Image (cartoon, rainbow, N blue to C red):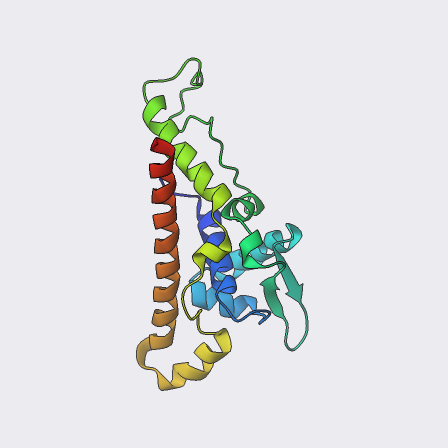
Length: 182
């Protein structure tokens, strides 16, 4: 299953911000570079996350975006909803209009297990679950180190740490699946 790109970008940006030192604002263009999200797309997405109350926007010389609350209170579901995506445990992904639990389509039993696990993962996983040991390098550290690092070594390191956080979230989702089977 693949999430809509907007949701993927939102989760990626929020995971990155959560892994920065507390209350250290990150500017949108630095965040775009670190997360490999197109800057104009990210700018619109960041406004949605601010309106949803998940981020604070600070203006000025030391401005940027910071989490509006501790990472443990921001669920993946909150981020998904802010990105205008609502997981629906009753939705048939295969386009059978009359598919519902009382009259299931042939694919319903298999799909409903996966869909339920995704909904459970989104509701149970917080940004705290996406933290990596030692955090991520701040955009300022990345910018300062780039002249000394060959071929974007620091950015590759930051992206590797983000991938590790994504992997941790995948393991949590797999655990949700196994819990649901019991």
